[in-house]
Amino acid sequence: MSHNSWLPPLQPPGTKVQHLKKIIYYKDILILALTSVGGPGSHIAFFIKRLVEDKQYITQKEFLEIYSFCQILPGPTSTQTITAIGYRLGGPLRAFITLLIWVLPAAILMTLLSVFYVQYKNAQMPRDFLKYLQPMAVGFIVVAAIKIFNLIKGKRLNIYLYFGAAVLASAQLLGPYAFPLIIVLGGVIASRYNKQPEKYVKPKIKIRWRNLTYFLAVFIVAVVAGAIVKFTDGYEEAKPILIFENSYRFGSLVFGGGNVLIPMMYEQFVVFKHYLTADEFITGVGFVQALPGPVFSLSAYTGGMILKDWGVQWQLVGGLIGTVAIFLPGALFIMFLYPIWNKVKKHPLVTKAFEGISAASAGLILAAAYLLFKDMPYQDWHHLAVMAATVSLLLFTKVPSPLVVLGTLVLGFVF
Image 1 (cartoon, rainbow, N blue to C red):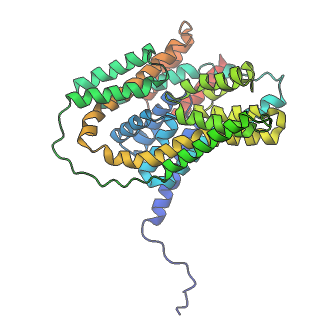
Image 2: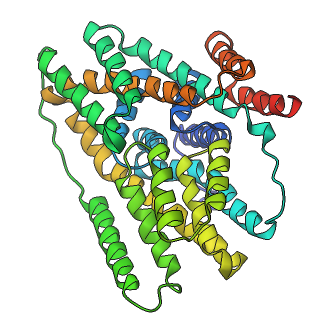
Image 3: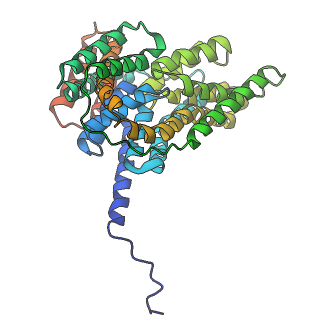
């Protein structure tokens, strides 16, 4: 035996470099989790800036493909987008770690907010410093709409679909299913008018049904357990089960992101079941829209508030249940469908339709900017100035996005 046989085996060339790249990638996801405010439309601008332009983990075309795919699915669009990016870069494990890093900061903060609200019911929580976050978010979304428009403007049909989708979504005529319906319509129109691709090699698609099986099994068990509880005398004692059942159902069936989730949760938890008062719920909504991270983390707050009479420990449990239940369906959808989509998108029919899908998805970002702007108190010149300054800084300077967010918060303190 060699005298130095006790030494650990040498790592293969490049192993340390690959490990370092993973750490840098996860650090970038954490920075996004701590700075991406303003809701899903604004999140897309943050993702483009850091993951596409600054770090070039994926190309602009790949990002638009992933984002368009996630727009079709139910669940939290920005969360599914960043999870799918993780899958694209490193498979299921990196997708799962990406999801955790992205979700946990907001979920922890919203759970602690539920504890704080109960412990300090009469405390006046300062909110003035948040007043410029909405115009800043509009600015981020406008920038995202401009950048994605530059990707699809090569064809006249794409331009028509871009603005057509924006107008149709802004009119709010199709209800909560507007986003997937508009995207499908864009795909149908594009498949009718685009030319057939010249070459096509049929891919070998191996469908792994495991994640779909998990989703359906959990969904059925949750619904059955919730139904049983409703017909027993232990309704109050079974609140944790009902939190999971309701949150999992929201995560499975909500199209359109947080803007659709919030009224559904209000109807269920405030109007129908009276688990929360209107003031308690609105407080959570205000903070989830101001904090960085996914809007779906509101489920962590509602989970904690529903168990507010059970003590702090149970509030923490409620926050955990709400978080897992609402994000699990979207994660399982990505793990099941993204590998299939990655193969199917090369089919001639999908290839023809995909430009329309991408153009319609891009138009929905423009619609999100308009809908947020419409609700903004634009008669206040401060808000218009913040929005314009945000757009200018992001388009014409190299100021990092986190500094833009920090500057907006400081501005709220000053004025």
